[in-house]
Length: 372
Image (cartoon, rainbow, N blue to C red; front, side, top):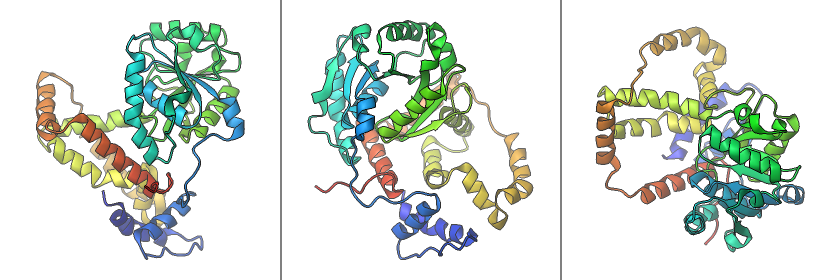
């Protein structure tokens, strides 16, 4: 995506909408336009290399982090915590855990460097402990990333509560199980909260903080402080809902993607190109509600709702409800192989991550690229 061109096209319209006396945007260059837009959002472009270690207070509060489960999510959390100076203990019963994690951290390190984090001696504060009770004995934070099976999480959390310090933050990375159900085995259910990252946690800023029915406000604020200290963007949800928010939006959108491809309207490659050249870059700088507010012109969202929303509501009737039946799975698999099959997953992931970092840096969410 050429973000500069996108900014050049959209930002003058935003400036014309303003009536607050803010100076109009200078179009001396796309970075100036983007800087103006970010200021309107209440953000600023970073112009210096920032420290990615926790401040003294947070370093003391969250010094010892235990990562339970060393899969893709757990490994990513471990990398992020290590890069921020935490002492990290990884607990996973698999015999190959240590070798896989060390190899995975080596793969993640270049991305951390691009994010402005130090990676020298990244594993110096890392240890492994297969015994869960021993692993959490000195934890300030427990971030659990186990299988999405309630009975397994119940067993793990009962052990964790029995052996972790009384002050430790209890967080689960579950992508769908509510904290209220997981916490039924706890003597103090107010301590447990969902801290659901968007994959991979070391790169994508969002963490959805989802309290259970009995989660205390103290736990919510403790979680918010921890994830903020890691440079994340925590978003506290107001109620539990299956799948939380980001995954529900992703599922709703992908359902229509599958429908359009299955019906032969577009191919997978064409659909990806449609998204990355339209709503993808638009929503990266202004979410759906702000985008439609701007779509309402000088009347804003109220004008959009009165003049354009009825037609949109009518279009909802024509959205698809596909299923992953045998024919659909065959079609999707064949197209994916033709579209992407000749490129290694590692290559695609690196290209995606580098583009994601470039976008975040352009939006002022990261310091400038490190000098070589």
